[in-house]
Image (tube, rainbow, N blue to C red; front, side, top):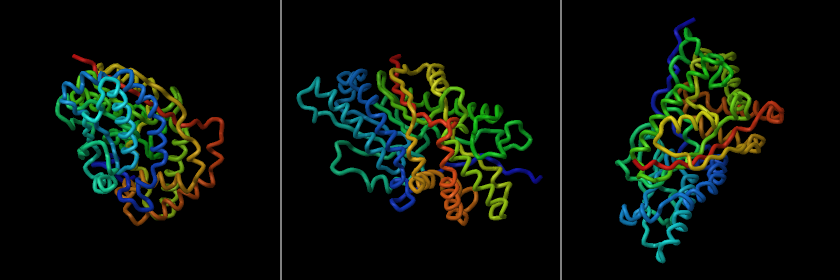
Length: 365
């Protein structure tokens, strides 16, 4: 067999930009549901844990918020509104005039995110000053102790890179028969988990430097039940369908088999115990609140909506790897395969992906 191409996908692959038919802005209903489901735990954390008087006195009545992995909206705006509403309610307890507290919001995503669409769709009027911060959150983004509240939703399942070895045909971790971390092959799962640990350690260390002492961070991400591989979840079935369509196209000679075998999605879905262990090992944060519950399952049954959500999230990766010519054909095939296999989501051995909501507090040194 010819030498395999590298499976590492350099650079970043943003959600589809603009506000057209296949844009993330119009096709992120599942992500919006996650933001809505996290509102209660975030509001309670701000009410119970945020020392608003101490933080605002130290920053001259300026409260700074960062949303990491903001994409193009509108979900980031809903999340920010929820945070500001909770902070304002807390502030009213101590101050008669809550208008004296000013808010600055930093919207962060990778450098090739469509910030133009994001800023064109900013709410108006809005109770905050908006700033764009391009760059990977797997590294420093803000000055030391400058942010009071950090938020990240539907972003931390994306790795900084595809793990080493899963693209090496001579490695036990070679993943040529699948496009994602199924979780049922020990060496592949270990390679992905190793990369996830490195990324989370980098992420937490950066945030520990940027958050003020006593500041809060809310993380919302997808996860698995302990001991359940991703291939036994509804999201895993989606990835199976995507991979099957690619191999079908390779069999028909539309794309090369080697290209399909060299594709791995840079994603990892941890169990709640895995991410809890990583946070505790890091040692910079206290886990103040943590909850897990089944993520939305009904969206998988709406074939048209779900196929558009998938396209908005993964089209950039496919275009980069295979070229733009195959995209329309591929997503037509995917929608049909998903529709033909809806029964898979009713099987007793297929579980819903979990939503994991976590609120962390920066320890005061």
